[in-house]
Structures are given as C-alpha cells and as structure tokens.
Length: 221
Image (tube, rainbow, N blue to C red; front, side):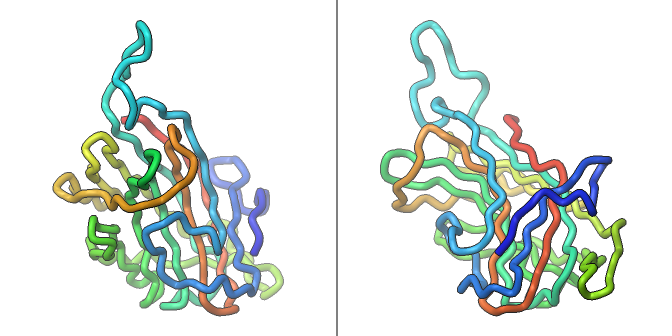
C-alpha cells in the first residue's frame, strides 16, 4: 500500500495526499473501534494534555472545553468501491487505560451512489445517519483515465472529549446533530496527552482503490 504527496491532483492550488491500496489485501473491510493499523492511515496529532487531565497547570488554565474537530476534502480517484473496502475518519484521545474515539465509516457497499454515512456508537456498532450520492471521478493514468478535476466531498466531524460525546458531522451540504450520541470508550494502550485525527483506507481484497485528500486539518472548537 502506498501514500504520497500527489502533485498531479491539486486542491485549492496545492498538492494533495494520495492513499493507494496498490493491489494489496489489507485484511479488513470494516473500520472497527480501534486505530486501524493494517491499512493506510493519513494522520495528524496535536498536543492536548488538558483534554482528560487537569483544568489548570501552575498559573495557566485550560482554554475552552474538550471540543475538537477533523476537517478535510476528499475524492475517490480510482477503483471499484464495494463491500470489500473500509474508508473512515477518526478523532480520538487516550487516557492511561482507554481510548475515547469518534469515527465515521463511509460505507461503500453500494459504491458512492449512494455512500452510507455511519458513526461508531458507544456499543462499538455502526449506525447509519444518511445516504448520499457522492459520485466518483477517476484519475488512474495506467488505466487511461485522467480526470484531474474530480468530484470532491467536504467532511467535518466534531467530538467533545470532556463529555465523551459526539457534537456534529457534516458531509457536503448535509449537517447531522450528534450531540445525543456517546463516543466509544474501551481498553487501549498508546500515546496519551495527544489528540489523534486521521483518515483510514483498507480493503480485504486485491482491488486497487485510491483516495486523494485536500486540506486535512484539526480544529479546536
């Protein structure tokens, strides 16, 4: 599997980040509830000691609450999107023993027309919020397909780690209030005092799938 800076497909005048399964079977077609480490992960981390820690350190105090967001644009750039693919985005933190995670699964069982948008609930199940006809525009020069313009989709997920709650999710022109839904909390050991924001791609077969990401940012809300 490959990840690289892609200057062939720009977004807002800048190169994008390309995730390519490269005909490799990653062994999974469901995102699960833990960090996905068998496929491809585009990730950023930001220091966030105060999220689950003390409200003050010395004479300093925590700014705001525990609301953080992951925001990006993406396009499906190649491949047959089916039940054999796990495409997701995640926002999570860890305390010394547990992970507190919010995750969205872009379920492509029916491809992108429509894609089923599902959130990970507190019981580790995925619940559908809506279906959306997102469309695909392929760029795969080896196959003679060179659509650089693409079909871009906007995503923003906001979570509240202090309350262990989702806040909201937006996909293009649709907004979903998730404030009544709890994050998934379960045992997990890893980097603490850090907020993680990522986009994940995996598959359980050798079909090639490619995603390009533009302007992936983490936000404090």
